[in-house]
Image 1: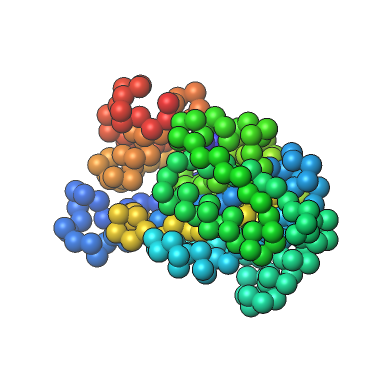
Image 2 (image 1 turned 90 degrees about the vertical axis):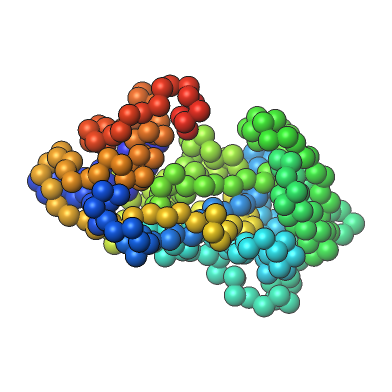
Length: 329
């Protein structure tokens, strides 16, 4: 995690900086849920397309055909685990952001399928000469079922032949970085903090999480501009424009958003922004679970950005390096 990844308002340095002060704290608030808000947990699952593959990388029409061939409504109804069909990457509920999606997401099934077939043929493939794909995913019953359903839709609509590679999770983590082993990989992203930049940074040209190998200077420039401004409206428009640029290139095929009820939601204190003196951190209870999470389970010292020091001033005792409580290793 770097300072660039954080919302610009959190990195701003001025004579009247902003902080978020919990309205309630474990020390002063009544024992009630009224002062706390429940936020849905919506990490996207998607199929990354290997853009170093000459066939996939050179044909946006083919990539679009693969995206359009999947009936997301049927997919989530068949899976039945509370997912929501995804037509974009940044999920609903993201702070200061209006989710973007492909323009065809409201197209009826007949027109969607007809367009997918047209694009597939335009890319040079037919029933007699189909596209062959190697689909990599980690061993998990739901993930495997999703892969089978997706491959069946590709086969039924376009005629695509799909070969599965199902690997134990630790093996998969290595394989996903070896692009000679896959054409399509089942991936997912669970943001470190509630901001669109944390999702979109995944697809920066030099991001270690950019498994598809997506490179678009216009996309990177928009994300960089958003990181450099603290004007919320301008920042939102820049990030929304960046997502639209990415979606138009079809480097991946979003499948579903996991919206799990109960255990899949986070209980967070409601916050309000208030001006404080430069570099001062006052009035935040160190026992606040949000502060404990940030300061105790944060990245190692060498990777901490400049703003991290202000959190440490009110941090409770942190776990020793290498302990089971340490998230980053």
